[in-house]
Length: 208
Image: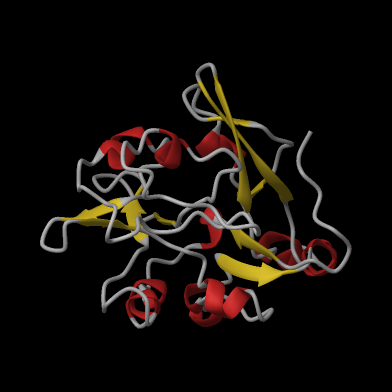
């Protein structure tokens, strides 16, 4: 079963179906003081030859992070709040094991720094109940921060934190919005069909 947030607990949510490709999140992420001017967001095209649809991807902060499990130098730590941090510079040996192991393709190996860096959910902000930099500037709320109760009152879709990659089940701290109950079977192709067709409720307004 999906992990339920405590009443009033704020959660980080990705709604890929709302992404408009404006790259505001990319620019804002680069302004984070811990990233040394580098953006830790992946903004990908779904099918660039046929569509302009883009999707944002940040670190999902897995409950049992594979990146940390495969790190031979024990450089990747997870804090008590479940945030999986960038590799510790004194320990990281730039082997790229974490880059290859992450099922979401998130870690970035900064070759010039000899260090793996990734989204830390702007822990300096979220620990104070402030939205991550990317969510604070997203004009379409494709990246969103708030309580599940607020989400249910204002937004369409279901929240899930469960993914299946073949035989590997992954539970995450970051939630994804779908139109079907999770878990999302990634390899079976249930990710895109599970996105919402009308995330902004435009058809409903037009028929009202």
